[in-house]
Image 1 (tube, rainbow, N blue to C red):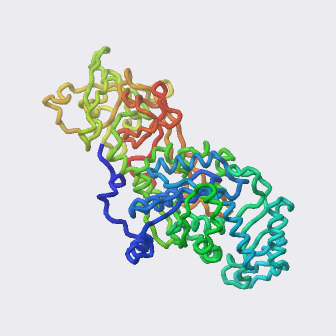
Image 2 (image 1 turned 90 degrees about the vertical axis):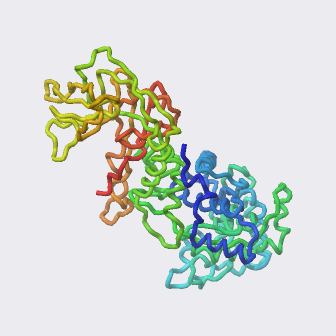
Image 3 (image 1 turned 30 degrees about the horizontal axis):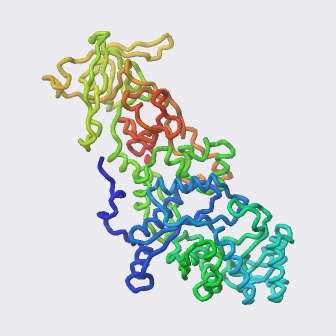
Length: 579
């Protein structure tokens, strides 16, 4: 089978974007001799297509520049985290074709974070605050008004250390106190107005059990985690741009390179000392129309049973896209086409579908299937007529070989390939008209059989024997060609016709008083009973085919069985939404 460009990184053109240019400059000028990146998901949900862009960037850069990429779970909020998500995230990364250098957890560094917090207190750069969350917001000020100092900002170092240690000992209830950085309540950047570094949560942790009842906030854990691992380029999306000064403040004021004693707990665990001074770089997040990617909204779709779970093929989760039939190479190709920039933009859903079409056109073998069957009886063939016709598995790749398809007197054709009263420009079957049966010859429709309600239930026709492959009339011209399957040999299959989950380009738009729930596309899932040629049913789950003239379909990852086949439509052959 031919490989896609995503499978050939050594021969692919050099990728050029501002992050890769920064890395090339850093290497050329000797700022770094080795590149280290990381992918740091919070295990509180399933990864979605936006995460795929970050995965491809972080792991891709490590591959391109001979560096390493760690997978680090940001497990600092045990209330929302679940081992189910941890396992799914690892599976998704490997499915995309990447492998991490080290598997780390923020919880691996809890002892180091704690020592770092005590250092900040000892240096007079952090204090224990008794303000409630609501009071903290009140004191913080606004974008146009400066904040006010907490009444507890000037506690002594000794008092702060005592209170912080008592916080860790479990003496205080949730929310009673926080550890805050002492920076600048007049800063124009609200993130620098004495942000919280630690909060009290009496919640068991999946990795550390009940060892801790205080947990670090994201900003300090993220920055110090990168510093501990010696990450050279910390890549994140643009919403963290305003957090970069706090990121730098945490790295600079803890300064592991000059205070290696803070890393002793890692040596005690047998973890290597890799500390450095990372720098954060931001890129635009992936925004795609006809989709919602807010974790809150995705959770609501699942919990309210508006979709069939996190792996529903209509969901933008990687689990859902995989079940839909998206391939790792198509996802990598999509990420390449979207590119990396500093400019937020909205990507059209057709770009995603186009990447899948281009990938599957290369790798998916062809099969014949009928999804809305109408019986066609060739009356000039014997009732017992059976023969095997030879078809190429892939017209663009002879290496895929050939297969045999049974042909008989009674066939299933697509109902939409017949019109009793044809519209202008119709090139398919009509009463008294001729079409070519794919690979079998030319047939004429002689009779239309209807039931008592006037509904068409069957067509009778004749096959021109001189138009069979290899015969004198095989090249006789007719306007249309249609596909078919033998009614006697075809296998009944459940065929799920998936489409975009939302019917409008911006389901997040609530200006009209509607919510994304009001924009759910009622045609996003339709299940029909169709028929497929016998060879299609033997495919393993997650095998993709092009059902000729219909689109690309995949054997369902969970429900497909040769005895009861289930195929999901991955994408149509052409963009049906552009009009």
